Amino acid sequence: MMNAVSKYFPDVTTLQLEQFAALEGVYAEWNARINVVSRREIASGEFFTRHVLHSLAPARVGDWQPGMSVLDIGTGGGFPAIPLAILFPQVRFTAVDSIGKKIHVVQEVARAVGLDNLTAVQERVESLSVRWDRAVSRAVAPAATLLGWVWPRIGRDIVLLKGGDLTDELAATGRPYTEFNVSQWFDDPFFATKKVILFAKR
Image 1: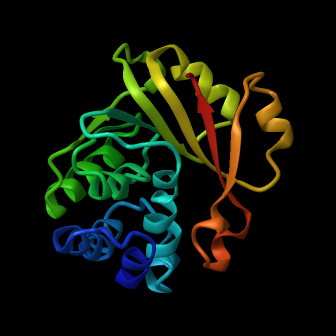
Image 2: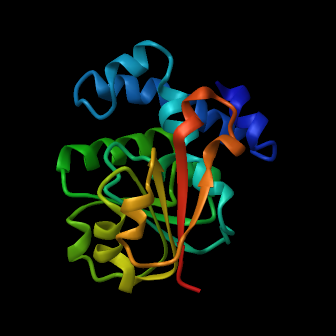
């Protein structure tokens, strides 16, 4: 699985590869106590592709400048925030979810792999008043709902991981967007219907 990271992101360091490699074991340990991802995916070896590599797709969109701030809306078990925080150690991530036990897992996973650029917060994202440069999210809510939660507090863009036919859902936002097929970047069959949607504010 580490070959996939090196294949698609050849500039990653040895430390980053070690952090990525540690994720599956750490998640398997926590998942035995708190169900944050499908146990079948861990048992079948699909965890890395479906969660880690999928979470890295937004890295192909826009620029990720050192010092920028990124909000992960409804992070769940830490996706896409944790893989992106490993890939971009100079970017500051805030992972938000309303479920305390999931935030606890995110905090412990971040600690286990040595991430110091990620903060996990138990809160409803729509109640936050902080501003960020970018927001990311993976399959949390319809796009119009997500944009309604955070649009005024995001300076640059909102990047969503979605799947399937999104025509009606994206039209409902009333905002211009750019749609990318993840399969153009990653060649695993899992990504055949996966999309990255970019709503740029400038």
